[in-house]
Length: 246
Image (cartoon, rainbow, N blue to C red; front, side, top):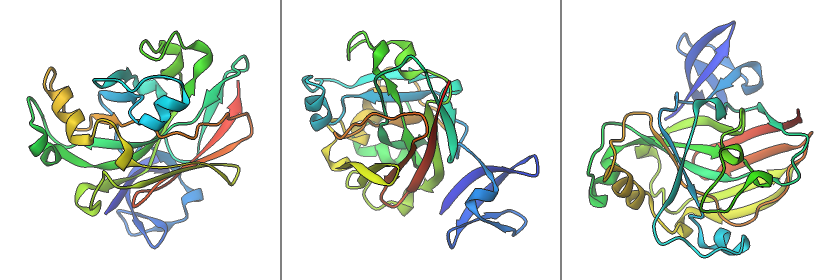
């Protein structure tokens, strides 16, 4: 099942997908452009992976990390499907990052990777924009690179774990203004989803609605004010986002 959180008539509703439309609890069917989309869950602690695809590390001229390179994201960063991301006027180097988002379903501590999927509730799409003007280096990502307001669209759907046969074999794709600029597969992750859950839960407790953004493959491109960016993941959907200048 695909679930969402939307706003209509000034009220927040839980909704599901039905025949390409948004179905509310009261049975109403609405077109996606008729509602305001929120992130499909309220993200708690959110972990973002850097350089978790070897081809992406190579395109940035960095060696693949020997252990997960993880940083945290604040709640101010998240917006929903069809939301607007603010592009700083002074920025010259801003890239999208299409990422599989893993949503934790229950408390997890010292989880072995063989049991990791038992702690997952489902999946979503994250577009984790990076403003690389502010980057000190790829092993010390400055807060201004990854924690700016509105720079992490999330959604549109929360897809139940059991509806995704193999999350480690999904196609990812990004387009700007209808032109495909990135294609890849989760099969190319350096650290798999079970690896990441074992690693993170080994030194801290993971909780319900924590989110792990698992990194992006090669194929980055510049985004500019006025662009429409669509990040897609097989079986989960397509997350649309609009860039505007501030």
